[in-house]
Length: 231
Image (cartoon, rainbow, N blue to C red; front, side, top):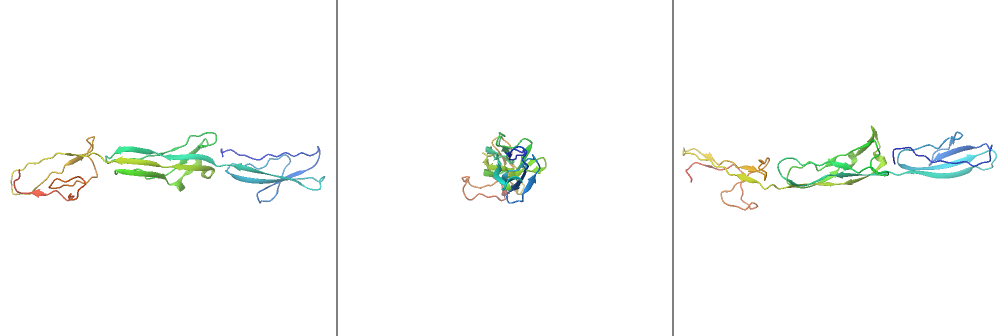
């Protein structure tokens, strides 16, 4: 498939001056007579088109027949989703797009054709590794406003998004009060990524005793308050 029309050709060999008529049949269709010197019909879309030909003359007892097949193969094209690795979590979404394989003589998009596709699995925000794939039924290849997707043999290559956990830093905070018999709370620390940017969408956990990061016992409730004097 190259977006152009293609047809079978034929030749008739009879003695000069012999009257004859040529007819063709496409597949299981009806016989169609051709005008003198007319060509067989042309086709643009990918497919297999089997023809039968028949030549008849009042000077011959039987008709001459022949057959041929016009084959237009689908054109290969590859859509590749992007890959983005090593992103450090910062609360901002990470997204990828897709690319279309380059055009060659027999592959890639025909000049003037455009491809549109929908990706699943992008964007991502939270730390983790995510597969990016294509919503294949949504893919369209068009020539202007005409959908020519069926003329392409599309290969899909998925992508990947990786967001690694940030090495967060808790900025030290302190608050000092003069005893007034009222309850005073601890100041919530400001969490920042390794570049110093404040993190968003995170949960701060606290413990009154030292704990390993993955240990049980962390509290995610509000920070406690104190009334009595403490050093």
